[in-house]
Amino acid sequence: MFKLVSLRGFNHHFSGTPMKIVLIEDQAMFRDLLKKICREHFHLSVVGEAEDAATGLELCRKHKPDMVLLDLNLPDKDGVTLADELIAMDPEVRILALSTECDDYTLYRVLNSGMHGYVDKNRQSVEVLKQAIDEVIKGRVFFTEVVQQVRQKLRLEPKSFPKVLTEREQQLLALLGGGLTNDEVAKELHLSRYTVQLHRRNIMSKLGLHRTPDLIRYAVSKGFSKLNSFRERNADSP
Image (cartoon, rainbow, N blue to C red; front, side):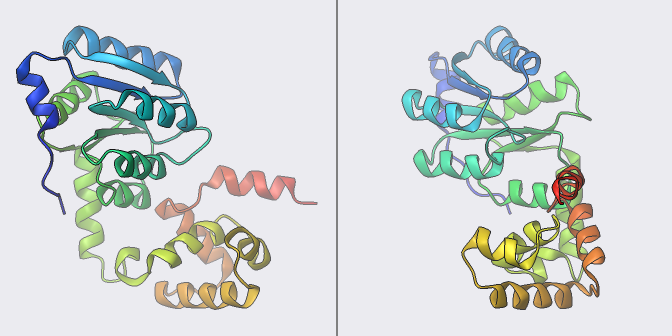
């Protein structure tokens, strides 16, 4: 599951040249904590701070950091999608994910994204955060226990979504599980209504689901859709 990693950060760590860090985190207080840890504990050079994905991407394009501390819950873009863009822009950049999301789908995507670590902001201490940063600096990977547990669970479940659903079906499940109609999903993905209907039937059949409420419950429980978003969408409906 884990890929061989670049030692760019490792070389910086021992050459005396401070590693360049960009912080992408929408909570100002937590961003200040990260900056303090990076500067005072590890003597790293924080070259940019962003509270959204668009600013973070521009800072990384400008400064070419060695490492990015990336919040996955950003206001303008999904953090895993941003990580994919950062790695495409610079395959050697090291990314440590920070998140309150510990659902199966988020952690599955983290493990398959090329990111180098994950820390649960709700459950982990500052000391664990420091340990994670240290491991990533040294060219290794760091995933907290919850990631390993989800990885094992998905591997053992005969009908876990990575085994039975294609990537396209997973994308559709996130939308359908959020309460979107076939027409709304078709418009979102530039597909025909018939194609979406076919995908819906295939997804439900593969997962052993029989009704739309079952589909929504599954999507929310696995993290494909967020319950708050579903409630907001229903509240906006006439």
